[in-house]
Length: 332
Image 1 (cartoon, helix red, strand yellow):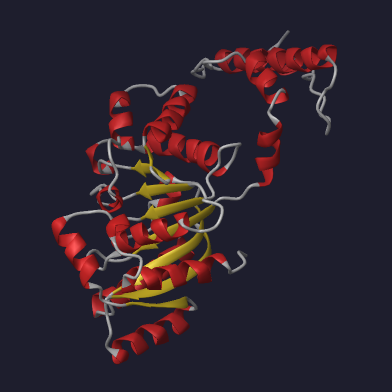
Image 2: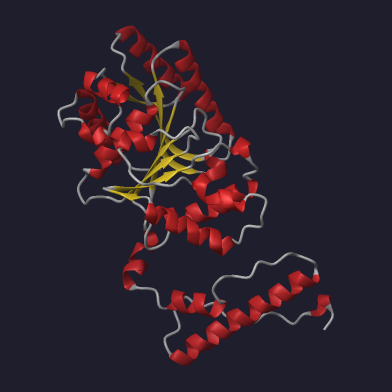
């Protein structure tokens, strides 16, 4: 039959899942038949086709036999909390403290700790052991065609291998300027959506230690952030960074529900007042000030995990207040 005269593809959409074995097999057959026809058409137009690892019939069968607990999670919404700010203001330390505080919330929520900075520091602040970076995983694909299904399988496996006590870990690793990440970023966005934000094993929270800027968020994730916490030290450069991040958030394709500003390690009332005024000007919620904490400073110098801090640490106590404030706030 000529290319322009294909008969309409058979596809019957129903709200309910097929119940009988015969009906299930009929649906599986229709899907497989139509997919094979699509592949033939694309090949005729000289498109490169990557064969799926599983047969479509097997994929459909698994979908029809989805466990009840997976069905219950379909309405689940992951809360993504990002931390941004200029270098040296303590955003990695505060991100780690937030991870500890969220993990102590009622119900033991599942958390993915994501380090988006190529200069990987978050794992050390969390005391993470035996982990791999995403850069390590994708290095084997340099200059090669990436099988989509294989990438997703390895991405899910990476999360399992990086499981830690109380959280899972996803460090990005190597910088993008060490090779072309265009294809990798496309696959990562898809895998991030399907493995992290959706499905029966979606996380309750993703806490993301961002690079100095936030432009990369739309390249590496779903471009959806529930809360963006901007850390500043109140310096002129730190204040300019707050302003720049806010402007970038408006321009790039990132859906950010809530913006917050936190002043870290500053007690001068005049500086705090200036940050509050800037927050009002930029329509950002001023979350508060994390006081200087000698225990945190010593931890940063000698190396160690935020989980080693005493419960009455003044910095950690303040972070717990911030977490309660943020988590009690309805998302837009």
